[in-house]
Image (spheres, rainbow, N blue to C red):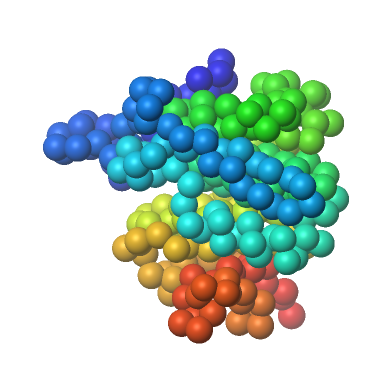
Amino acid sequence: MTQDDCNWREYNVHGSQDDVEDQPTDIFASSNADDAYETIQYDIGDNLIINIRSEKDYDKSTGMSVWTGSEVMCTYLKQHSDVINKKKVLELGAGCGLCGLVCRIAFQAKSVLITDGDHQVMKNLRYNVELNGLPLADAANSSSSKHATIACPQLIWGKNHAIDFEKQYGKQDVIIATDCVYITQSVYPLFETINELLGMEGLFLFVNTCASTCPMDDVFKIANEYGFVSSDDELWYHDDDRDQKKHPVHVFRRRKEG
């Protein structure tokens, strides 16, 4: 945990820490054992390899493993690299950071902010950035990070956190979120964050492949409350999902008035 990270864990979105600790198993408890990790190599073409350290078992922490949604999003980005090229990119709930690293290494984003709220996840996220030979900006130094290509500041969702974050990092051109919405109560702070941090002409790219108690209709409803809409014309399906029309990448934009 860096000096500026607060001691926030992912389970806080469900209620108090005491509520979770009363349960038989804490699914957000991350193991420190070396044998709990594996390094996955992603060949993204053009002789570019991205290395990701991930926990082997999904039941250890939702943010410590690579989820299918991030892999789907990376395929989308590879086919739509113009969306990222020379843009300011923010990844929310980044977990292991695969999408943000792809944006920085493969698609020449102007800047990339790879964020998560869970301070334990942040440790592994920063490790993965450095594992790929990238200089990690000091997120506490706004003058440094403003000119850096990649940084990993902690970002807890919600309006007040986003306002403070915007003061340091400014508005973003593209915001990415994958497999990080599995309960409806997390969607409101998600769109509060997006509303504060996304530029007026920006894009929010979203895909959810994980098990979720939050139906997409609720996501669309809450997005609309914050002035964001997604067009069916821009839905994108991975080859493995196209026939069944499942797990599309949604492209959200601010609703045009008038």
